Amino acid sequence: MPTDFQTRFERYAELAVKAWLNVQRGQRLALVAPLEAAPLARVISKYAYLNGSPFVQFLWNDSEAARIRFEFAPRDSWKEYPEEFALLAQRALERGDALLSITAQDPDVLRGLDLEFVSRAQKVAAEKNKPVQDAVRRNQVNWLGIGMPVPAWAKRVFPALSEQDAVARLWDAIFYVCRVDEPDPVAAWRAHAADLGARRAILNQKQYTALHFYGGETDLTVGLPQGHVWVGVTDTTPGGITFVANAPTEEIFTLPHRERVDGVVTSSKPLSVRGNVIEKFVLTFQGGRVVQIRANQHRDVLEKLLMTDDGAARLGEVALVPHSSPVSKLGLFFYNPLFDENAASHLALGSCYAQCLQGGVEMSDQELTAHGANDSLVHLDFMVGSDQINVDGIGADDTREPVMRAGEWAFAT
Image (cartoon, rainbow, N blue to C red):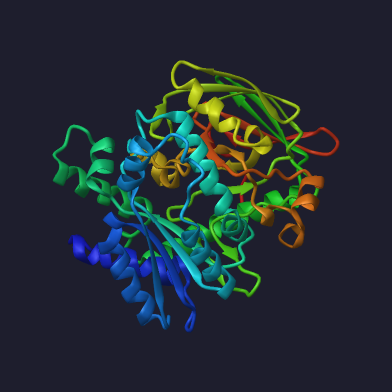
């Protein structure tokens, strides 16, 4: 097992290209990254070239520049957006390029800004990038999201440590949850994929009509549409490329029926939204829509998010994650949904993934909606699972079967 940082860093980049994204010989790579992630982006490009990619196109962004805009730009300029950026990404996907996105930013970068201006500007950005997001959610290309520590993020996770030590600790955490430190990371990922794949197959065979989450302050029934598909760990493009969309990943997930979610659900872990951390909130659903929000802080942030469009107040994803996942075992809050969503079973407000419905990738947006799928410009995961939460699968004849007990799988593979 490697212990020196550079060896682990190189292994992380190589795993990203070969084991997770699975860049093909002759396939270009579009690499979206903040400026702070340039060291990792460069090493990833090296392994992409070594793997036979003819060209790596860098699409840089800068969260600090975005903050400057939100702080000082005219308040009526929220419609402005660099359309060239969205077009570059869209053309990359139309060519069949692989897509890799690195997250590496201060989770508090938007804190204290004009919420109305930020919300409107981000909605415009989401509208401009919707063709790209639709292609990603339909798995039209192999894509991957990974993380890289930067000082501001690391200090948020480990506030008591020095900047240097905090970054080192966050790297250790990422290497651990991504199985980089295993003696044979590829074998470890294959075993992990096999286990979740077996559970995914069982749930797909069951074809429950609904899931019932209960325990603690949660009592929520999530209806599932006919022909729903459980996916997770690995995905496959229409061209047959198998890939891992997120690293780490501990979930198997599907889409809820947009009109059949009822009851009360309480968040089990903090949620970071637009630079604001909401420690706990309670959502009440009726007929698939959020009809009440209770929160001790930043309730307005959630309200603004749910007002983005008609689908923002409905669910687009239901995901099952065991309480004993590596992310959960660490006991850290990463302030980053890429990692935090792998700590517990979760739900997502907003858009669904089309591959979670039989034939969904080939359906139009209107057809997806007719089958119960949800569409939105937003997709926000929030944690609901814990060692107090049970999940039952409800069959077509209203029979119930245990799916999870006290946050752990309740059925054998």
